[in-house]
Length: 367
Image 1 (cartoon, rainbow, N blue to C red):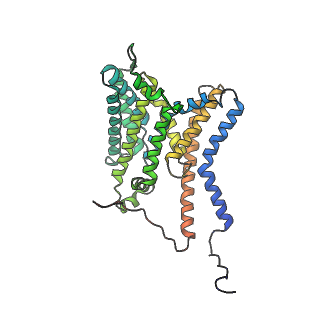
Image 2 (cartoon, rainbow, N blue to C red):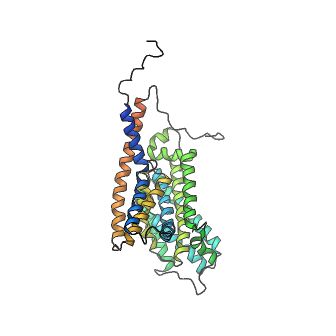
Image 3 (cartoon, rainbow, N blue to C red):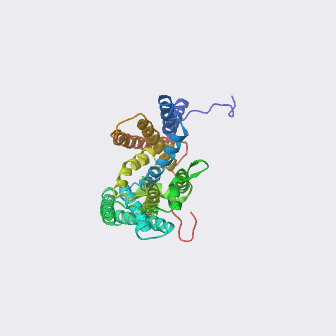
């Protein structure tokens, strides 16, 4: 037997083909299991409710009504990438939509200027949250809960505890069309969600900024040793979250057309359920925009089917609470499994060495 035909000895401790197939199957289930669950739920409800569920009206309703929760879930996801939580997003949503209507109805601002001011204001609030968390050295749970409570107080002060109701002429049609219009036969808000998700996917998965954010979230000490400014990137994450909350507030104002100071709190729990459950899909173990959209789709299909079956009102918070517990558990398991898989792959690869993330560029350099 020549050297060229001699079988290569198996490295001791190397993975067998069966183990590799098992790992590959587990990865596929983890990555696309939530997407398969969405299709399964849709099929089950379609068979159970053949006259009402599998219709274009139901699809349009899901795409329209879930656009604001989807944007808010994406807003909650960005700080989670850095290992922080922004509990002020529900309070910020309420303040943003009230401010839009206050500026348009009471102060007579042109609606485009009012929307722009609220979105910029949301970004400023996000920056303040990030500064308080990072430079004040306050836990993100406590810091954002405190700022959120303050925003709720500002909302009550602006509305004087009541509602902002437009006059007899109503709101400008161009403003309400931000939510009520259609494009290519589908509700326009669905395209807003796709645009936001695509932008976040591009930043997080294809740009150095996203790589640094993930490093900050997975190991802040290692990020600091690599020269990544942890504080700056955490503030960036909170600023992005605040900007998206301001945008969601604009959509909520166009949808509701009445300023309700307490409506934003109803969106807080679904947003975190979507963000945490999304970290178990597409890229299990790390928050990601496509996974968040899949998680929102699961919640939307489930809640719509339950609602059409005539479930009681209390089933909605029960569904969200149970799903949140499941999401946290699955997210933790997916993260641990991802770490184990990475460690095993590094150990079994001959001659492989762990490559540290690329450090940020120096002044005048390129990443």
